[in-house]
Amino acid sequence: ADVVSARLREAYPGSNRNKALQVDGLHGALAEGYRRNLLLLTGAVALVLLIACGNVASLLMARGSARSAELSVRAALGAGRSRLARQLLAECGVLALAAGAAGVSLAILFERLILRFVAMDLLGVTRAGLSWPMLAIALALSGATALLFGVYPSFSAARTDLASSLREAGRRAGSRRGLRVRSGLVVLQMAVSTVLLVGSGLLIQSLDRLRSVDLGFRSEGLLTATFALPRDRYATPADRVRFVREMEEAVQALPGVASVAFVSRLPLVNRGGNYSVWNPDALPEPGARRPWADRRSVLPGYFQAMDIPVVEGRDLSEGDVEGAPPVAVLSRSSADQLFPAQSPLGRQVAMDLGGSEPLLVEVVGVVADHRTYSLASPTRPTIFLPYAQLPEGRMSLTVAAADPMSVARPLQARIWELDRDILLTDVRTMADIVLGSISDTRSMTTMLGLFALVAIALAALGLYGVLAFFVAKRTHEIGIRVALGASAAQVLGLVVTRGLALAFTGAALGVVGSIWGVGAVRAMLFQTSVTDPGAFAGVTAFFLLVSLAACALPAWRALRVDPAEAFRAE
Image (tube, rainbow, N blue to C red):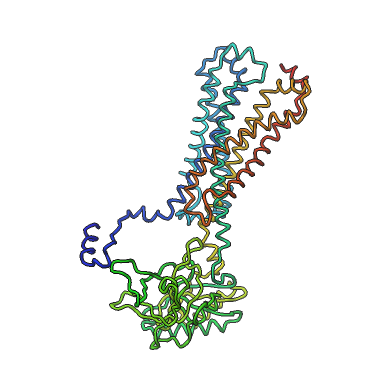
């Protein structure tokens, strides 16, 4: 490739001076458009799994702490540490299998619902659904997770000091070190949840702004379709123009059709088609990059049917036919690019269509910019040519009607009356096209939002578990406080303050991590900064509500502590 590039540079120094060939692997090229989304989803899955692992470890540690008396008795009766560890690990294995089976059952139950929310084809997945290897991996992963994160709690419980455990057999208190470890796990869960929530919040804001983008053309009440003219029977430009004119008259006569328009490339669907264009009176410097514009062939009435305003000059007319002077209509950005600070009307534009000489066309009008490539990308310079002067074999049509889809069958039937070999393809409404153009972002937003909700639910469960253990551990202390006259607000403050301190510590770490982590979604954002204050404020408020909800039940249990029962238990 380097040799070929060098030879082309020597043969064509003017146009190939700054050009080279780029070689990519086939698999990498095919997966290039999907790699980012799949890696992002894989990262989200890993983060949610990490939160679940934290919960498993925390709950197993709490369970081992609560069973310290039982384990001490077993040890006193002769059970060695290895025997105790094997028992606890066996229990973890049973829990893992049960949890894995339950998870797989839920996956099978909700498979169709999940696929309804997520367009898997946009992620490069051609065959979506559960398979035996996938189920086996899920079961193995759940088992490995429970066993791996059950090892430390199990051995920690098996290493309990026999004498001290027997002395405290009647007390509910646990290890302060264990409580600190579980609190640290909750902080980690909250931090990871914050990263996912911030990422999904940014995508939600970006999606909302995408939906409110001004298209610059009409999207409601339009049916679109594409057709190709057989080359053997429509070989000459005159044959193609004649048939498309007949089709236009036939479709316009259909009941319920308000208007019909033809264009070589529909907005947001048929991208590209860009050609070098330039002002012949201001030739670019040798080797400099020439201006470009997307070329579109249209029939008269296209701009009116699509509600694209003509801001200067005139629309293309019925008189712009073969043999008449070549004309064109420019988009606003194309006119400003070729003729800055001056009117383009009556000026000529040169187009490189691959022939020996450029095509010279006269500018007769300028239309407003509109989205032709995507909602997220800037408007592209576009040049519109009369179909009669540059007819193409593949065209698209838009049909305006009150109920667009009701026109689809009569439309195809009418075209078959003209030619049985012409089949309409990609029949859909323009509203569906607009919605489909953001389906990638919508799918990723939905998936990340679901993962973020699962993550925050798991993190809240972990926070609840730690606070419940905290209340149980300090029941005696709470009983003494109540006996000495502590008010309900003071008891509530003891628990809620602890819970909110953990939550906000995790949230603060998560916000710091989000500033670095959300760079993964930067390329998917539209008019949204990765440090958007609205997203971070929304996440903080949501965290406050979830944390308060997680604190509610342990705090209520703390209020119900009876000093007499607490002392009696001691």
